[in-house]
Image (cartoon, rainbow, N blue to C red; front, side, top):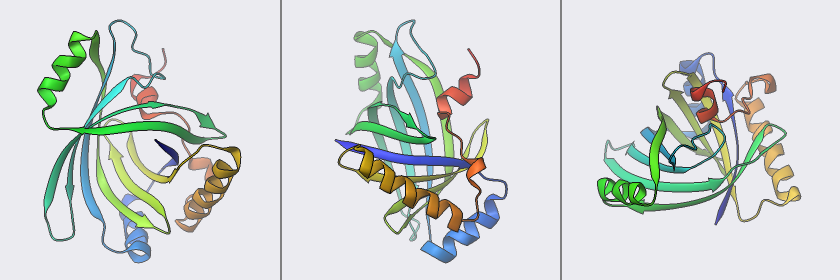
Length: 187
């Protein structure tokens, strides 16, 4: 079990922020992520997490590309603009077979999301600068914790906001809606 404590914020100048991040955290890993969210037939909502199938292509500093397919399900929560998600994740080797299993148990594909960008590790925080298709550029800051206790979340929130400020991004740029909610629009 991993608890993700994260925030995302809108970015106006992605190239400038990339320069800042490279100066702080070194050479990034490039990534491309294609997500498909699966829901029980007829029940898709922007706020339910469903089951996510994520195809990831990651390129390291040497140019080596790794491709992975991850399946994720989570319990989502937003606390004062910070996401606190209880996430479970595992790798699958055969996407088509897993999708057939999902169909057989009564799920169907719903919203899809595509993002690409760069990732860094900086002072115990995973930082991603990503362009989300149809939405724009975001910086995502994430800390993994063993529990979602209030003291743990409060400490992580303080660290995430300090990092955001160090990157020169104002708190009013934080986006508390989930990407799926933003992509689906108002319902």
